[in-house]
Image 1 (cartoon, rainbow, N blue to C red):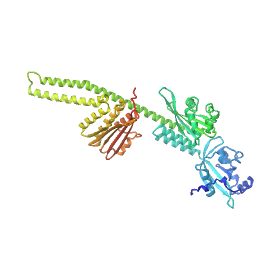
Image 2 (image 1 turned 90 degrees about the vertical axis):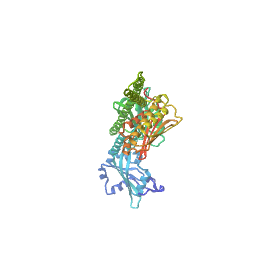
Image 3 (image 1 turned 60 degrees about the vertical axis):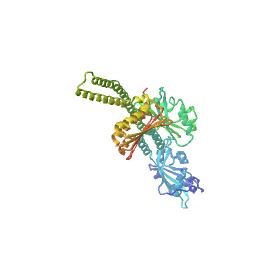
Length: 544
């Protein structure tokens, strides 16, 4: 169907002609005169509505009574789109244009029942004309497809719960799906958080259309200090059960201000989201129309709540696992520091003593047989090599330069030693204004540098590497680049932030950075690999 021109988009009730029938009785006679008598229409299970060119109901069958709740007497004389509060998938003008120019229209509509519930209907509409071509009436056949809308909602909620990477993404997706598929005009999620002082707080997530009248209502909900006490979210948290408020103007919380009335809010509904035994969030929905409690709707929302609850449980479990991983990394650092000190203060001193004893034996008065002197010389060389190896191992486990002189000095020392041991030519580019950072930041970046250069030596086959370290006002950055064989795409994908797998070293780097609010990026091609790490300069060790 071709798109109508703007000047052609006229609503049916705006036609410049008089109805062909002078009275409703004549219209009803015309209806009876068509091939299907009204008696047969009464037998249909679908809602069948006949309206005149001004959208006024002339016929309302028993199926319409069952679907909408209004009797034929109550519906007759009403304008359908007004009292059903029709929400069109396109503009009403486009629907009227199709009826006038094509003669029929099909699509899904959202209507209101007598009890206020919003339902989805599959609608087929046809325009009847007189013999001389004048529009007479419109036959509308509607079938309830709310169940299909609920199924789409549950499907989208399940997908969001399984694929969303964050709680915020999952909640926003579900809020949008709920409002789209159920017809509630405003959705809000109150995600419960606990402040350091033990105070319970609510982080708001909203879904509304672009209507500016909802903005004051959002501000009222977000800033009212009674929200977590007497408000919808607070009461749902305390009772741990759904709460339906049919008329918010009669509610003790909403009646305290005029913002709900000004926004046109009539009905509110709250649903708890639980993870384990705890209420972790509350879903709030608001309707412009008065809606009576609906058990089917509550059941669907309960299912959505369970899906979101699983997201919270998954994220909580992942956070617990992350904290355990970080705790293990910290324990590893502490153990490295202890072993480094033991090697330096104990084994290193013993080896130094062995060297002094051997040197003393070689210089003993009276002379030493040549064979014994040769063995003492060999022992002296081995003791010195052991002492050097122990000192190097001690420094690698926990370089004292990192604590004494900072990250820049420790980086230069480590890179020089790595280049000498591996034969890989490493270029270092350190920002002169880097300065000292918090110990947790310096230790994290140093461990990442160690891991990167070790991986280059073991896997990349690169003969060169570049290390860059610099900072801006917010972050300090570490970039390690090689010109090796790269990383296969499948392996790289498994190391993505959302991936469940990855090497121990990669996971360790990510956990260290995430604990400090930083990030890790790995790019690879056949020309080499680039690892970029960023850490907020203001990050602090959270152990204390």
